[in-house]
Image 1 (spheres, rainbow, N blue to C red):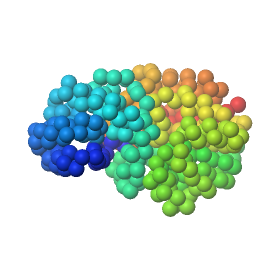
Image 2: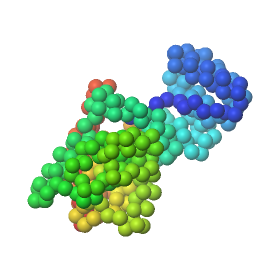
Image 3: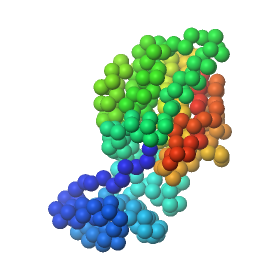
Image 4: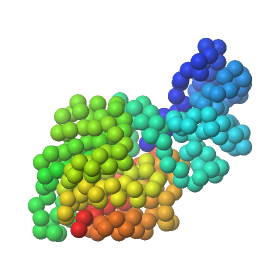
Length: 313
């Protein structure tokens, strides 16, 4: 999933707000020159208006003005410490800042809150998403190879979204917990009655709390969730703290032909295969299955990805 576009927020100046709204309307109709003029007027009235700076960066980028876009995105980044619009990602995409910066929690929460109402339809019908089915097949294969029954007493679904992965694994779980940063996504998941418990939290906060409470999970899932995480090491380390002996971590990731972490044009992260293996090994997890696959398409083209199942000692 990519960004849903500029967010309308108030600058605190009624006239600036009106000009900003007109600029959004003009940009949506393709009048980029008119939108640029109105955004310039808006920022003369409200120079601290981060959303307007971000929109100006977007419009300049669409007009082919890279340097102007970089300058506007930099002002948006500097004006809003929470980076709610994702200006750092845009700067990285344009090669003007850190190559693979972390996504701010505010940005991710806004992105998915806006998307929650049409999430299931967009993924399953438009993007041909099949991550949960691919994950279940991989987990069942690993369990069969180990001579174990594919059933788990406690399952954790990280980045559960609206519950697509939870639904795929419900029959294999004694109890299942869903965690997501977006309240709107959690509300959609709760409506389905899949989870025994749902929580709105970041991965890091939930994992730290679960470790402190000495909670243990037999299976931890992350279906299409780690594409919004740049450095996997802290998350994998946190998962390692709560996996029961012999427990499994199963996830999908987007990948690329090189090593390390790469920010894609879609503003998601791709992780190289050797990087994934290194992170898992460094945290005491043994790879049981790692295969190239595609769990979604972009503009009709399959996206290169990985399905991974790793085991705790």
